[in-house]
Length: 197
Ligand code: SF4
Image (cartoon, rainbow, N blue to C red; front, side, top):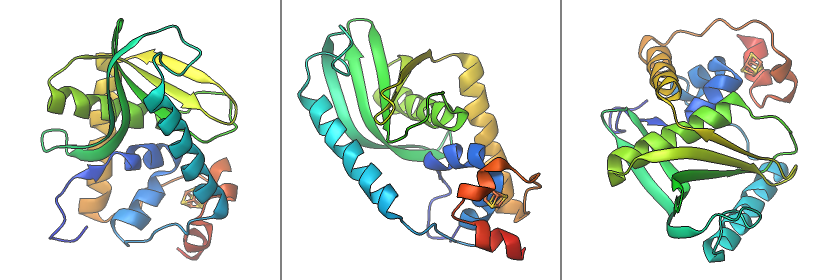
C-alpha cells in the first residue's frame, strides 16, 4: 500500500481473504490486480441492472412482502475505527428494521462466508456512519435466484474485525500467508503468479 493511500482496507478484500489469503499478499504487497474477464464485466452490468430495478421497487427484492420506508443506494463509506472502506450498494430501512442488501452475480446455491463477512462489514460501516442499528444482512444471488438473510450478531462483527487485523498483518509484515493447495486454485486469476513463488 502506498504512503498517499489511507490505510483503510477495501471491504471487498474481506471477501477475497476468505477465498484465499494469498491474494491479499499479491494485491496489498505486490500491487497485482486480476485481469477483468468478460464474465466479470457481464456480472457487473447485471448487478447494476438489478440494483436499478431495486431502486424503483416498493417492497424489498420484489418477492418479499416487506415494505421499504427509506433507501440509500451506492453509498461510499469509511471508518478509521474499523480500518475499512467500501461502497455499500443498498441499505433499506424496512418496517422490520434496517437491512443491508448485497447482490451477487453467481450460480452457486450456498451462502459463501466471504460474501457474508464482506456484507457484514458494510453493515458495520453503515451503523457507524449513519448512526443507525442494522438488524440483518440480505445476500441475493442473481443467477441462482437464492436469497439469504442473516441477523447481524456480535459474533459476526468480531469475525469481521479479526479478518481486518489479519489482512493488515499480511500487508504490514509483507509475509506470504501459508495456504494448503486449495480447490479454488483452478478458477483463480493469480494461478500463474502463484506457481512461480
Ligand atoms: S492459485 Fe490458489 S493458492 Fe494461489 S492465490 Fe489463487 S487460490 Fe490462492
